[in-house]
Image (cartoon, rainbow, N blue to C red; front, side):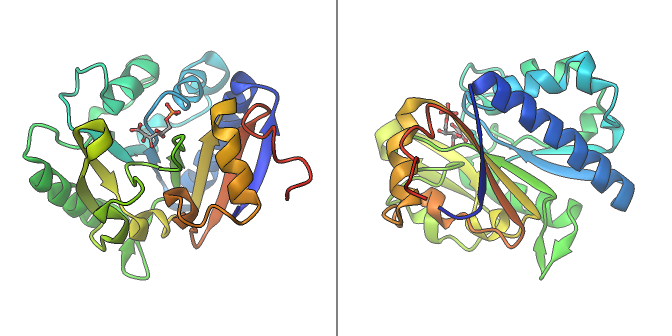
Length: 243
Ligand code: 6PG
């Protein structure tokens, strides 16, 4: 299991800690370069963290005008669809803080998926600083599915080998298209945080920690910068003595 990990008693304390870390990192990068470029994770786990960022404890301590939001992946649905990662982040955070709409970059899900992915790749090239010639996020937030996928990098899919910066992928078991950043961008980030909670993830974490999870897509997340896992006790329950 690459990177470092912090284990919290439950999802709520994990989310609060991640929000605190987000605020500290945002301050550091805004101080250093005048902006903070972050890609958000989808799914359900990060929602509480986003909600915490919108609370009085954090919202007035972050200069939102200098925070620029992108997405690690998106479902191929309209932005007002219940499955939309953009919608989840909008309800949990964007609608509750004062942030210029031009600071928020969702995937364009009205476009044909391949055109949307190509458009997003151009956006990354045109708006992010480069490190070693590739767009460089200050922070990428990720989750992990029960099959070891992360973002929309699902097992046995062609996107795992895609050298483009963003790609469309048809996920057979979900019978749906997804849009996602690819490993070249994810692994070029300065900080990658994986938020993983719940007993359903404990078996995969044990395999990863014991070196048996080589084929899980999440194992391909090996950024040049920091990799940190925010785990709750249930997800980490099988890690005792493994690491
Ligand atoms: C998505 C996410 C995906 C998610 C995992 C974990 O669009 O669903 O990007 O990679 O992080 O599936 O999802 P949960 O947090 O809901 O367990």
